[in-house]
Length: 463
Length: 112
Ligand SMILES: Nc1ncnc2c1ncn2[C@@H]1O[C@H](COP(=O)(O)OP(=O)(O)OP(=O)(O)O)[C@@H](O)[C@H]1O
Image (cartoon, rainbow over all chains, first blue to last red; front, side):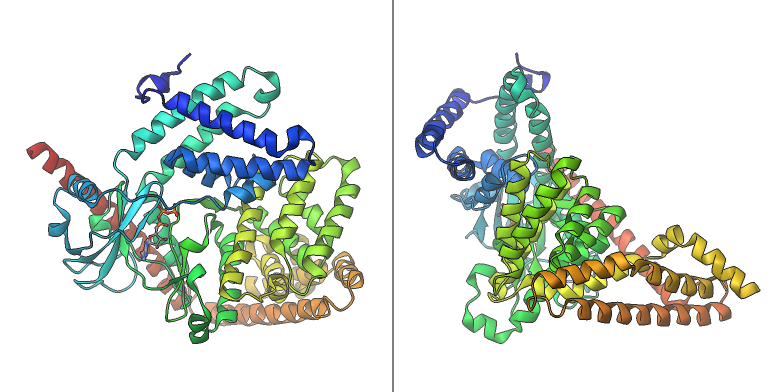
């Protein structure tokens, strides 16, 4: 029953069986830990999440990537699973430098020692699909924005692991075959396994062409050009292809390396708030946001800037959504659950009339226990509780909505890594206010909503 | 003239949007947890005031500038447009450079 796409893909012998064996073992472990269904639903979903994470880590790159993609999709998977998958370990054994050097030579038509001034054989990082090495520019380069990068500038050379495409294609072919089998069961078909695999294949495909990431990085840097606290490495396109991305190397601390000494040198509280601001500006003004923020993708530079790396997953928002999101945020910030819910429905959350009241009551309770009552607001706890509630009430979560909530939680995590005592809700109050006002003041909004007011004013003036 | 009316319209909208429902919502939020949100409505009003002021100034300035340079747009607008254009051209250049790198790679493969 192989589909057309399967035919052209080489599936290594035994790969399907190995995956199946791992999955079966995982399933057994899950059943055991769940006491064969005797533990409560939330606990069960958490255990499933833990086992899914172990399974992904054991199965290698495509599953790690799949897990990472799943970790921003609370619309598809149970919230507890999604939060667990976030902890997926992405650091794996590096590929030998010889192989990386060959890959660069094949891609650029010259060996790394001719392309770069110094090519560091020691990898900087080895992740599931790519490996990063440091090098220096041989010639000056004029990037898409900002000043010319002089010869000798340190750069980060990100290279896709050779053969990664075929590994992923093979795994996807297996996944597709299973999806077809599963979709024959009516109960599972509702879940859309084939569409899901296709969607993941799509996202993975986009991640496997590094030029997408480079373009987003340049665009992001351009949009934040007036913000001296935001840094985005510029891309050296002359040495970049779909499989190699060369960007200026940025010195800094990863968030989990930030100690007291580092914090002392920068205004950590301001930077943490600024990080949240930057995110809000992306979501509510620019219409796209970095949806794959995690501590390894964010640096703090010695100059006290935030440096954003790795624009693999990007979410988008339309003007109408931006307005509703601002309202939801304001509702949460001011403890107004009814408002948050009303505008969530505008964002595509379909809640039957009869369930609005019980869900509102539950949200109100969550807002109080997680956001307003504690000394420091706990957005993560709130989001998990909120998504769990929706799951319990069987409310379908729209993809964009889920992505956004996940991203908001990450922003809190990031802000806390910079300044542990930050209360995001408190910091957001004046900001949420300004946002709503700014939304209402937009010319296109004015034009649309005040036609009547305008003609009345005109008449008054002419009278 | 149009901008002046827009300013009035902005004001009109403001009064319309800071409606009783919104005010009540803020008050409701406040009533739920005394203390925890004591800054809420104040911060809200302050934010609004600041924004209205900013917008007023901006509109006023645009009005003044527009009466002197009717069609071409303000110098700062032109500069911004030029910058945007510059960025887009540079983006295209980046794409071409990247294609060139790929071509070099393919050419080298063919020669081997
Ligand atoms: N421009 C840069 N300057 C400094 N370090 C960099 C730069 N680019 C990448 N790195 C280092 O390489 C690591 C991996 O890079 P990146 O996150 O882009 O790869 P990835 O394969 O997408 O990883 P992940 O799967 O974890 O997102 C980063 O965490 C960082 O330590």
